[in-house]
Length: 304
Image (tube, rainbow, N blue to C red):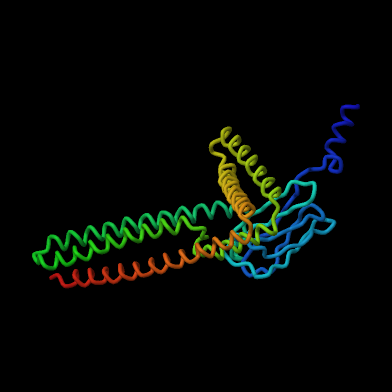
């Protein structure tokens, strides 16, 4: 009887209180001006996009929340919803906003995103192969031409294009070394990072990292038991992505903390100047390459 009573007490939702913040977010679609969901009562909720705080609020005593956003949700943008409460381990939910007609759960969304990224990479690869084959075909056509002068002209243009592409590759490598974020310059990226730094605690980031590291371990155990568990595989990909994002956030947080906000922004201004210069050079090279390719096309068209 005592054993049964103990089991009943341990299973009680009141006594078996979790140390983790719960978090459920309603589907997020384009043009929404707020984010709704349920969490642990009185938890603090933040909605972010690329570290920019879009809205903040506190859940009700029943755990319901509705966070009004500074700007409407945009389709295809990635959003992060954070739930924190003193004495509880923080919870974070990341999702890509979808069109209203395609409301699906996060697991499906992640699967679709992975497929989209995979197809995009395939398209880029195929386009590169196609361009290479076209280039080889054009080269063969010109070289086999009876007009030696025309062939030499075309090949001279190609030699210039190859040299410009080498310069472009060097510039892209330099751009990768700067603290830029996609097409965002170092200064804009730094300002967002500083806003994130001022509104985030390192302890929350470390807690989030631990949660997702543990989740990765759990996902791998499930896959070890059943390699065909595609749900576990999708979760693993998502959780590994979250671990990577959290680690980047922690590194950025530590960098700002070490340098200080003023120095961090000052360095970003210097990098922005270099970024703008490289972008201008890249644009100029791209224009030169396009011009040479047009000249090559004219050479091909002049062949009988």
